[in-house]
Amino acid sequence: MNHFADVVGQMDRAAFVLINSGLRHVLLDVLMPFVSDKWNFVVPATPVAIYLLVKGGRRSRVVVLCAVLAVICADASATVLRNHFQRPRPCQALQGVRLLVGCSDTFSFPSNHATNAFALAAFFAVYFRRLAIPLFFLAALVGYSRIYLGVHYPTDVLGGAVLGLLFGLVFGAAASCWCGWGTRPCDASAGSPAERFSRRP
Image 1 (tube, rainbow, N blue to C red):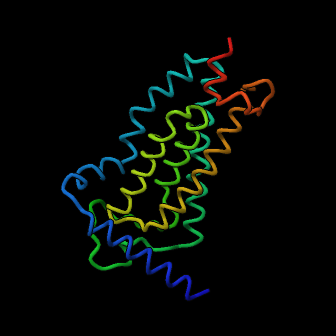
Image 2 (tube, rainbow, N blue to C red):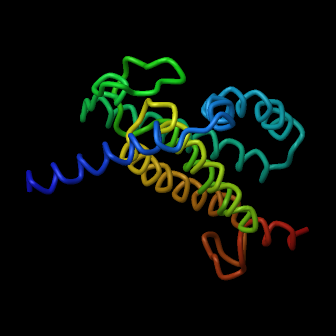
């Protein structure tokens, strides 16, 4: 078991070095800090969410509230896990890391950025299936940026992605049941919530 953990750890560090240093590019040096900054997404999304809460119907309010709850719960769970595992960040533990942003003093596993991004991607993919590919691509890009910038290992991002997916799908299903889309609440046979929503008066 210890040998397996050592092999996985070596592969994790090798993949980190490859992404952080071996695949660097001047364009990525500009793009990745932008993608990794959560405020570049929070600021434009906030007025939209407020508008839907104030002017939208019941379904819009449910979707916004459940999306926010999904992120809050996913982020809190990731923080609990990080404090439990207490894994140092690569920028704290390794020599020669190419660090493009500040190295936080918090722990590394799992990545909160990846957790939150995949929670939102999974949540909205439940409602807008046609947008699933771009949503998950953006979430993966956020996770990749954390490795490229030197602040997370690949397994940190993978762990966050799995955790985020769970919360996103659970809260997406909860919102669907709450609104009672379909013939019966939680009945997925009639298509996605967005499709069912468009067919209802």
